[in-house]
Image (cartoon, rainbow, N blue to C red; front, side):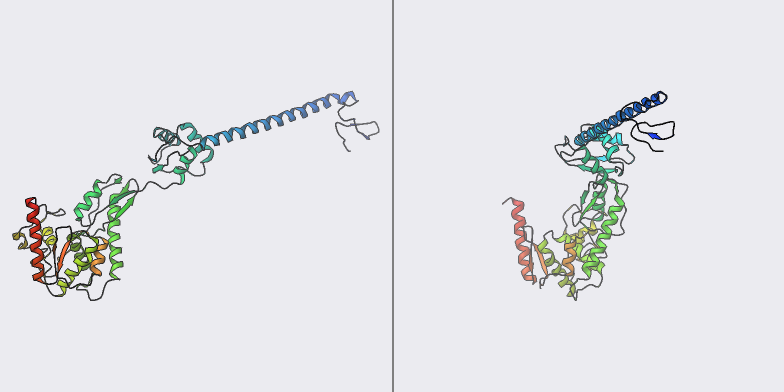
Length: 368
């Protein structure tokens, strides 16, 4: 049996008879059902319009929320915020508001729930740029790199001095680890994140030195008067303590290497001072003539060859200088009064340079 538009009714012969669209059926028995059907259709139309209206308002509301999350925030300068592990979203929102990163904590929490569920917020120390939006703040915590702090270790410090710097550095956690022996740390700038381990930083310093020493040892000049990387490191530490000038390091290294080749004692004042100083600390007085006669294994006025271990932590440049020294016949050097050194091939020339240096000292002490 077929149906036309609107309700249909069957005649006495069982044939279908289409009704006029929009008009109620002529059979009173079916008129009530027709009216009910028409009312349902009207309800469905109203419901459909309501759904469309709600959807339209929802889209408009969502667009409005998005526009709020993308507006520039109140920060006028970059600011770092530390988010502790396990902090809930609402607490993070309050923390960002208190730090001046955002103005509305509720909007941040809503933004995370609407747009950030697929990627969790991370713990750590993060830098928020000036003017960052609410959505941008969320993205910093989702995928930004934690703030990198840095610790710079100057060349020429003893291991005790280096460990004191590491211990005093804010942002590191835990105790320092004690390296075996002196001069086993590479002076360099080291980057770390908040709450990184002090022991791990010291381990990195040791590993960096091993890597640099192995690399430069392969590039060494031929016929050096020592046979191991450890001996090179000892001599590099002496060079490090003798000069802080980059262009002098290869010249100082050449003097010591020339002396070793000739069987001459190194006669380096810093080695004497190291042997007399408290462990891990510098000698806080000037050397005397009696000190040069002191009997200890680091006194290169009294021993032949190299001391038993480094006297400080040498930087890469001093290690390079020792392994590839300048081409030079110099056997002596002395301070020249200007921050550098005067070099000499002969003892006679050296004595003249020493006399000049003593005149500079006398003039300095007299104020002329």
